[in-house]
Length: 191
Image (tube, rainbow, N blue to C red; front, side):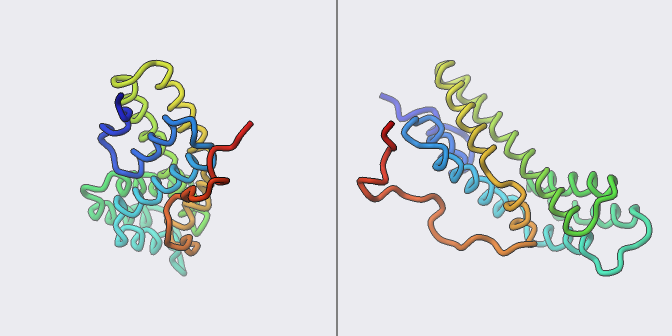
């Protein structure tokens, strides 16, 4: 018997774990939600250099903003050079430009841009996992995984995560990424 299509998923370990949890009905919504949050957080850590976050924070949180948005957009474009090779970093810079063009600035603007980048990346990752399952698994399992991942991503507090990623709130404590069930009573809930 196969270990499941998640094993051959060409994505990072966090996204593979989310697919594994979504595939296995023994993991509840809290487990898959924690896996989705962890996957987004580790992707952010690996795909958005600190210099990019600092540069964008400087643009959005400057003490005396300029009168014209064009100067801010030019500064965001200067930060884009630092995102070469980082998919989520480029996505963040693009959303920052969009948010500035809409007139949002300050913490609200930075939060909104980060939130949009995380949501876009989560949607892309979900589609990539679904495509992989379409090729490697049955239609029933693919539908189950799609539904479970959609629910998991929907349960993540993206706004709080965006504020943490943008450095507007302290990150959650380091430690176990996903809670482990170590007790006999911590297993699968009975109906």
